[in-house]
Image 1 (cartoon, rainbow, N blue to C red):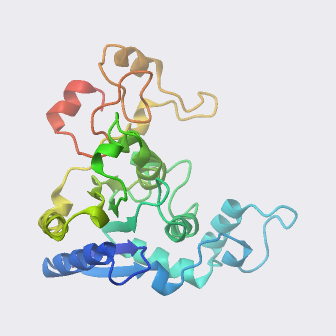
Image 2 (cartoon, rainbow, N blue to C red):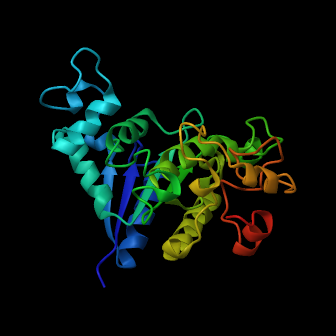
Length: 285
């Protein structure tokens, strides 16, 4: 059996941080379980976050109006992307599992990690209109977010001051990872470690180590499959009339993003749902 490869895209400035400890635990556990582990330490690499003309070489397809997405797609096809992007894309291609490890900044990833997503996940390499979501290019790969928060868990409840963490996670998990086809595993959230006693932080790390032992066997999160939509510009990429009709009798929306004015399905972006529950809620999945 070929050795599995895991990529950890890591964004923290300090070697002594809790994020560093979480990253190190993942490297150790995955290595012990036979993985080849690659770490892209973005700050140590001085990875460039800004997406610019410097990311392509050679003649532009449209020299009058630089359109980053179009130009990097053509550069990817023709082998004209910058070396740092190509190196990261090769890591993605080699990996069955990608873990994004970071502290939550302003309800999202740090700028340097957002830059990695902007620059590495180029059109053609990571997605196209024909290959997206559950039909996406990386549909045979798994990805997950692992992050620390400054806020407590109660602050990210639906009735907490920050609002529902499921809504916070939707743009990253659906709009980036699942859009590229990844099977998205439930996030590993370390709630407010800076304000926890040492014993709690130790327990957090042990829980993470335990989870890592069976990570690839986990069921991914639930998203709305492309088959529910009219995938044409004429149809507006909207839910099909049949699905809308079936959804009327359901107690919840389809996903966090496709709520249809109904209550959100519980823990849609934080916990994989049992198969039986999915079938009961949405028989057309």
